[in-house]
Amino acid sequence: MDKTALRSLLSVRRAAIAPESHGLTRPTRQGRRARGLSQAQVDQILHRAPDTYGRLESGRYPNPPLGLLQDVARLFRMDEQEWMALWRYALGQDPPHPLDARSGTELPGVWRTLLEGFAHPAYITDRSWNVLAGNAPLAAMFPDRRVPANTMRWMALDPGARRMLTDWAEAWAPVLLPQLRVALAAVPEDPVLRRIEREVLDDPVAGPVYASSGASVHLDGAVRPLHHAELGPGWVTMCAAQPLASPGSRLVLMHFEPGARRGPARLPALRTAPEA
Image (tube, rainbow, N blue to C red; front, top):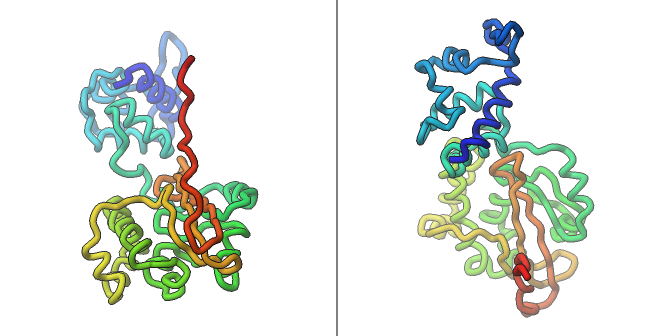
């Protein structure tokens, strides 16, 4: 527990909430009106025992429960980054799920502008693998430059994908399909993911692979064979990251090397230089 950081985060967010917005009066302190909610008012709004919130803010509450952290975060209108910070400061771990059930479904529009600046194929999906935006080099990879609306459904089920993703059954499916299972474990109520799972289970090719799939190995950093619509056969290196403001979404960058045979070995890993 980082008591100093926890106190700073909570006190700042508490001061930003007007008591009047909850039908309360602003507390006074030494003859002047204090900013935001008082600690006692937080307990009152959340229907908690006296000093419950005070113990949390001061770091005197070991192992605070999920329900309390969630109620406080929503009362204080925290974003996903603040929600993650709250968990790390209070419990030393990441939260088990996003604060907002809609998290991972949208991103600021500036991401589209940034994608257009990449020379390599790049795209962003939401938590359900719906493509939110992609750039021109990405479109060039596909026949007729038609980027699929959902990359998971396309990779798992589309006959065109099984031709484009060379050696689909051995090089792609065993790594790809377990990721659907992991995503559903994180957001089991997601209707898009559930529909894709049903389609996969009904598919005579993908279904058995999915049913027997083991642990997920993310494609980040993986090198796989791929037939580029304009450049022909080659090898694509997948690099994936997650925008911090939208847990579950993905930024995927790809480096394509033409050639029937796999190109040179991977580049050296990026590491911090040792101190002199």
